Amino acid sequence: MINFERKLLKKFDYILLIVTILLCFYGFLVIYSATMNTEIGSMHFLKTQIAAFVLGLIAIVVLILIDYETLGELYLLIYGFCNLLLVAVLLFGFGEEQWGARSWIAIGGFSFQPSEIVKLGVIICVAKFIDKNKERINELKTLIKIFLFCSVPIGLIALQPDYGTAFVFIFFISIMLFIAGLDYRYIFYAIGAGLVSLPIFWLNLEKYQKERILVFLNPERDAMGSGYQVTQSKIAIGSGKIFGRGLFDGVQTQYGFLPEKQTDFIFAVIGEELGFVGGLALILLFFLLLYKFIKIAKNAKDLYGSLIVIGVTSMMAFHIIENIGMTMGLVPVTGIPLPFISYGGTFLLTNMISVGLVLSVGLRKDKINF
Image (cartoon, rainbow, N blue to C red; front, side):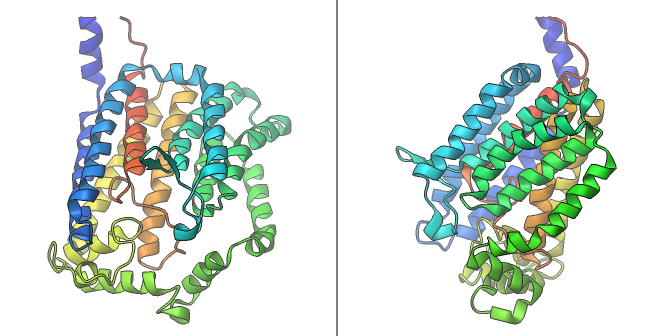
């Protein structure tokens, strides 16, 4: 047992854990600033976030002690549980009136967003499913099986309707398939099919979703209506300049001009109050986090472990690029939060569990004998 602990400590990626903790504390600071002038006050938001952080640390400890292969053996149970959660959201969920999608569910006094938890479950399940079929990855029959396997959770999320989250799933699953050795021709076929289906996709969008895309193409279309969020966000980021207006001193942030400032548009708070320097520091932390992920994926002992880390990396990268991009008006607004920084207990806990999974894979790049 002592020999096991020594080997465990030797392989543990302390830098990855430190970066994760720094990102969480960065998030605490910015959330405090973003919510200090709200009716319920900053401490309400911080208590939820800190509680999720503590649970996340516990989850990381548990996951690094569990061999990730054990989760692979339970992938069908995890897959079934994930789909049941999503069905429960459709039956008992809420949030449609406030956020445009029925994405939340409440149990007692506790509410959470199941799709965030399902992301990790699907990554584990798809990684194992691909690993079991890796020798026949480019056979049409195998690809159809993978497509059907993945389409159930994605379809259930699209029915909420939460297309932003559905796109996150499509993105990380596509990257996982590519890394597993998917033939380029299938990638071109998928891109072609996506382009052909765009008119159908457009016709099935809700009115507010169409408006978001139209505002993205023409920001001045409705600056005081559907384009208000992006307009105020760009003003906030631009006014921050190099060093920012100062923490707790942002005009757009503190006087309520910036909507969804503790969640979707939290990067605008950073841009206004901490400026280019604060934004760059955050991006560098994200870069280091993703670099450590990729390094662990390359050194994983098997395809299954590597695909888990690739799935987590792709999921995080999509969130980071989409969230920062939408606050600057570079991509359409989708309601995708910023990892470790945006307010949301379920989201933060999911992010930390993701890190725990990656650390578990990194610790077992070689077999450890007890």
